[in-house]
Image (cartoon, rainbow, N blue to C red; front, side):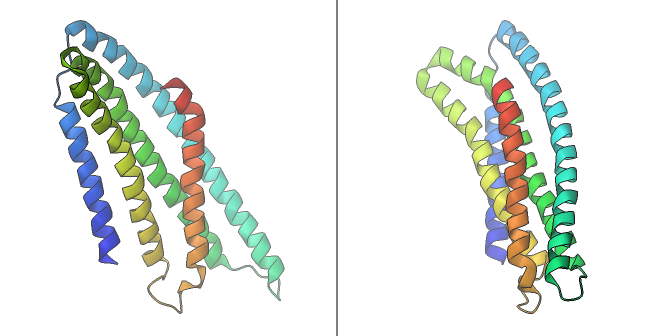
Length: 197
């Protein structure tokens, strides 16, 4: 299990290395920086509001998922009692997936908003330089999405007994919960943030 953890942590480190490289690029003229400052301030206000709303919706969704799982497991059991373990593990997996997706999206948008002025500045020198800055800035999000997904799934697998066949009965459902949480946040972030930022 060390391979996915080391790989994902390496990808996170690489993403932050790319971001550091992008932030080291020239920010252009004072006027470019002034306009970029307005864009950055507006994006920050929007992203804070958006992710606060997504966090609240994620908590509500986790409770609803837990309640539905309790109902289904209670109806399918002989005595009518629900399996509390699968309820809390799946709800927590949903929240972990939501947190990983939210972190990748939020950090990615931070880098993207700060990359814009650097791409514009590089474009004054050459199209090739602008393309390199833009691609490296965008690659931060790509690497973070993959790395945090792999890391999150691996940690959910290990934490909920995936290494022990006797305890691994709920692990597939927990991983589905993780994926649903990640998709839930990505959907709301895309619907709201893709339009504004």
